[in-house]
Length: 132
Length: 129
Image (cartoon, rainbow over all chains, first blue to last red; front, side):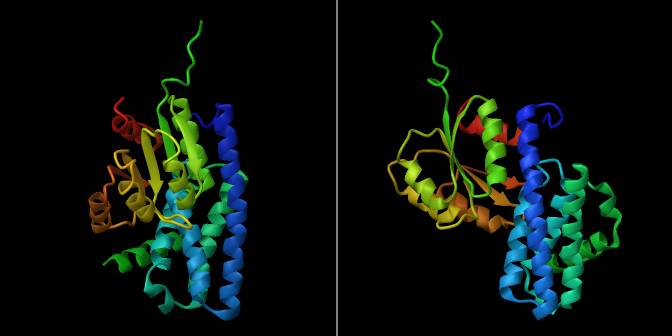
């Protein structure tokens, strides 16, 4: 895909990146709710929905790191294991996805460096655990 | 006299509620010479199914109002049951879900996230290009 010079593609990608701001705000609001009242079905469902959507599309737009984080988070949030976690731990991992979205918004590039973050390793660990 | 470029274009209906996916797929398939319409939910897809001669329906599973499974069931029990259906599934879908969908009459599956060239290859094969 010619993301750099095709004017229509540049416009489509720009709209996608713009949509990430709304998703980042929604993630932040969910984290605030969790810190106030703990994990609720509604909040977990909303987070899983956002993560599921990003897992399905971010890589196609060239942001595989966001897709990768979202996929792990989606799997984790969609399992009953999530309710066994301390709310702060959930917020820490959701904030990681929020941070990835902000990096894409700011740099318009794939934040490869985030794959080395401890939170990525934690998400992979949680994800693998629920698959076993 | 120039021929109308629309005459021979195969028509594809995309049922997908995520505007960012729908827009990108529409763009790519338009560039490949297809005529594309978008349904934003399952009900719109069912309404549009009967309204035109589609060469292919691309169907997302997770949609509001009617999900992809229900749309597939309705399509296969309608007069349009011969239209091939490409189902877009999440990576997390299990083999048994895919087997169930195949039983319901889905022609092929593509897991999200997909590469657009992969999508085009699958679409071309399903419309017989």
